[in-house]
Image (cartoon, rainbow, N blue to C red):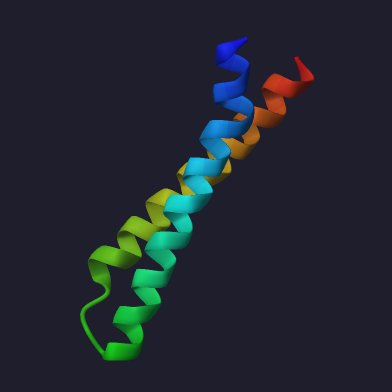
Length: 63
């Protein structure tokens, strides 16, 4: 039961929170004119992780 709660709720929520935090930092750096290469790479990798966690939770809900 604890694994279901982890996969259904915790992973998508944490990945969405991290994605939002990195996106806000990326926007702040873009507005300030700072280098955004590291934040852009982090945003891209977290986007992939976010999609993967959502797809995993959907897959586990079906099976």
